[in-house]
Image (cartoon, rainbow, N blue to C red; front, side, top):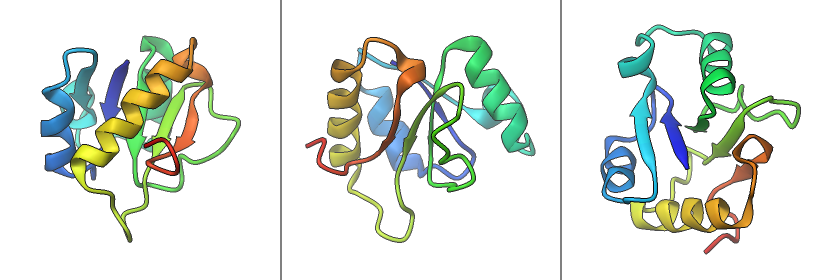
Length: 108
């Protein structure tokens, strides 16, 4: 899975995702710019087949044209649990663009 981490995704999540050989991980600030709008992020993710990882509930909309993994920042999962959930989601979906999931939310 190609995981595009939104600006506010915890560094610990990025670090543990980067250890997974099955995922390509990048950050919005590295491929766009730190001030990229949600619309610009969504367009980039859609065009380049990325699944957005975010705690920004502005992205959580079942009509998004790109994949989305959402976690709640008020009760963030431990990094390893988040990655295990993303691994399970990756296995369950054939089309990353069809992903719109809360993590971990039963995926572990």
